[in-house]
Each structure stands twice: as structure tokens, then as C-alpha cells.
Image (cartoon, rainbow, N blue to C red):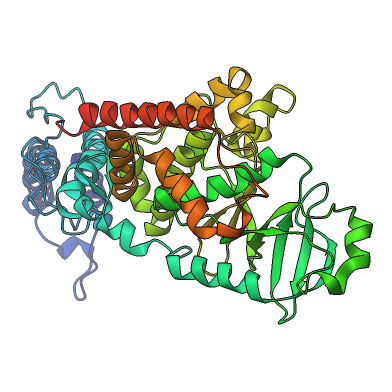
Length: 458
């Protein structure tokens, strides 16, 4: 600024103003020529003083403004909605804190941008605590209770499954309707898709080996004892080509090579089914469904939690029956196919209209699966140990069955009550299987108690 005024003064020295009137010799006296030099000196001095003032005060004002901005970030209000709208109206817990903002000094060592970034990062670091702590206090009671049970919000949203009324109606129906068509379908080997006279369909399970028929029907009975309503309505029947029910399809029975007076399981055909993928929580070797996983999945919507609640029931059911044709099938085949756990679960489907998981093909349960426990038990145990969140209704049923050791008598009573005319065609569940089932019920109960000890008092 001083240089600018000096140049201005130099220009003024050579500058002359023409005046009308007398010739040049009649111009102002020589003493007036010093006046521009004096003005230049004064203005130069003022410019120097002004520059000095601005040079000292402006940096101080800027630095002070920056510090105020940092302090405003550090002293966030309790309501953080403006800074992070996704947190809703949650309030900061007492332990919430940002990194300490350094005091201003002449040797400022942390850039302003870095200090502001650190404050933002601190907010991000505390986000999980906010959502975890405050969300648990305000909302988690609805999705998880006592830390190990799916809560009321999940239970209310659960698909209703197959009711007792559905079961009774199906059992009465297959006793009264004639079969008009027998065709290939419903899985492997000699299974067939049946069409009844009113157009209703049934997947009919036929086996030379009766223990698979026993496994299918008694696994269905066990699901009802546990209150697990994901297994389709099933009932026993007997193939009699000369009876009114089967007489219209005699030729088709012969083509299927079905023997006379063989027991079969008639399962209601369920429409609108689609494949089901194994949840991420169970795919890796570190598989687990514990309270923390449920809390994290709570942000994904109630639909995800409803599916996980059904998977909790599925793992318990398959462990008790030692079913090796579902998730254990995927685990076992990992040795040949590393991506097997990414494939849809075997013998499991989901209704597209209600999102109900449907547990299909349970014939390996309770008998065949028990004979192969030496080979498959590590896979069964791995899935059970991964589970630490349960449906309260399922746990209550298990506790009652364990306390009274009544699972055997109850299964036998159901068989005699539901199939009184078929006692001579199919043996009841063997006593050896009842013994193994009781042991497995106790192991499931032990797993539940372990999880309660881990999480209920935490």
C-alpha cells in the first residue's frame, strides 16, 4: 500500500494543471511546488499505519472465529437431530463425548479442518452406541425380550402357520374324497402328486422302507407338540386298489409300482412356494444368532426378524429329529462344493403370500437320522450351538416336555387318536427313538439355559 502511494506521489510531481490567462511566467510562485510532496508524505504515513493495523488484527479475528466454530461442534446439544437426522429424537447418553478440542495458542498444531473432521468422526463412532443403547431402551422391548426371546412385535408379525383347524379339516378330507389322478411329482423316487375329486392336490409319500413313513408322520406330530406350525397338514392313508377311494386309478397305481395295502403319508399340497436362502448368520463357520445379531437386524425391518424367528424354530426342530435332508445337507456337501451354503436350503420353501417358512420332507427324522448320528452329529451340534435367541412359546413347550418326560406318551397318544384304523399297517415310533429324542430335548434345554445365563442378567 505504501509503494502504491509513493508511485502516486511521483506522478503528482510531474503533473501540471493548465490555467487560462497569463503566459507561463505568470504562474504560481515557486514555493507552491513543495505542497504535493508534503501531501504524499502524509498519505504514505497513514497508509503505513493502516496496513500495520490490518496486518495484526485480521489474523486474530479469523483465528478466533475458527475456534468458536470448533467449540460449537464440541458443545453439541443433547438433541442431535439436526446433526444426524437418522437418529430421530434419540438423546445422547451421559457417556457421550467428543475428542477434546485443543486450546488456541500461537503454536496451533492441528489444522481447523482436521479438528472439525475429528468431531464428525466422534459422532459416527458413537452412533452404534446411540442406536444400541437408546434404541434398546425405547424400542427393543418390542423385538427382543429378556435378551434371549423374540419380542411381541415379532410374534405379532409372525405368519399364522397351519392351525389345528387346518389339520383337522385335512385329516377329515383325505378320509372322504376319492383319488382321481396319480402322476409324477413331489420329489424323488416313488412319491406321487395326487388329485382328489374336488380338484385338491396332495403330495403322497410312498416308501418300501416303513421307517421313513414313520419318520415323516411322527416328525409332523412332534412339530405340533412343540407348537411349530410350519409343517404342512399330513395324514396317513393305505393304498387299496379295490377300495372306493383308489379304484378309479388302478392302472396308474400299477405303473407307479405301488404295492397293495402299503401305508402312505398324504400331505397337503402348498401353493405359491419359492426357494429360501440360508441367512447370513448361519452360512460361515462362525455362524451365530445371538442377541447382538438380532439387535443389528432390527434396523432391517420386522420382516427379517420374523424370518429369523422361524429359523430359530427350524434349527431346534431339525436338531431334535436329526433331520439330515435340510441345512445339514448343505453343511455336509461343503466338502465338495465350497459355495454350498450360498445355495437355497434343501427341503425348505417360503410362501410368497405370507412369508411362512414351510418345512418339507421330514422323513429322515427320528429314525433314519438317529441311526446316522455318528456321522452327522457334528453338523447338528454346530447349528444348535449357533443359536441363542428363541421363541418363548417353543421354549415353554420344551421345558414342559423335559420336566415331565412326556414326549413319548404324547406322540403315541396322537398316533392312536388320529390314526385309529391304521395301527395294524404302521408300527408306532420305537422306544429307542423316544430315548434318543428325550436326550436331545435335554441338550436343547441346556443350550437355552446357557444362553439365559449369558445374556439375561447382563
